[in-house]
Length: 384
Image (cartoon, rainbow, N blue to C red):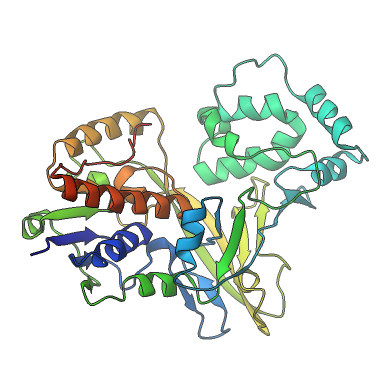
């Protein structure tokens, strides 16, 4: 008889593993504390405007992983979409990431790529040879003017602390381009599911061997009912916060509905610190193949995540990394439990990484089963 598998969380991590194991005749129970599947990728139609809304904020699918791109297209048609972010700073609109157009507009120049690269090198703070903080990284590579225009205020609002308190690694995800490419992501593939992300997850879970329990919290004692458990909830919650609560940033959304087109773009960042929101997303622009007379926008606000809030971004500074190390040691001593996903490993993961790792977890579990080996607590070291 095939083993019984318990999965905590019906986001992409849990759904992919459930789908893969159900194909191999395992019996799957999924426990989801919310009233819907797809986690923070949940999407639904707004009753008033008819717009497909990314309920927990914008999610743009992009990947260069051939396996992941092929995999998601099994469950829905992906429509062409390129994420072109704009930024408003000091009353002017620019393209992000910082590219040749941004540089020329900001400084009133007509640089070619070589000239722009030389200019950027000249305005960067060359005295900073080994940047340790976000601020040092920005000053070294984009100079004070661009740092203060695009990064200082936005980062302070997003993380609730001055960029001098954040590690340089955060800024390494924001490249400077010396051409006019304003595609936000360098990924080979990019698109939007025609019917939304929740539709994809529902298709993944549509299998007679999978039973989904919505509005159901999973108690640790229930793990005894299963031969193996895949846990995508917060790792500190599993251990009853014995080493303290791990820190997250959470998001609040202020919803507005408008007639016509509100801002003409899916996402616009507001970089000035005196503007309380970090960005505005206009959701009908995430589905450009649809036509809607009315529009729905989110004004997005970032703050520290309290106990009853939805966790979004792991903070992962020195205090949190110390706590995480203690939780990883506890988790590694568990048996028949694998910690997965953004919350289970306390790492910021884009959708394509989440899906790729879930496929790897399913592969490893099946290989362990076939070889009589023990499934590890983690497929990827959360401390890495």
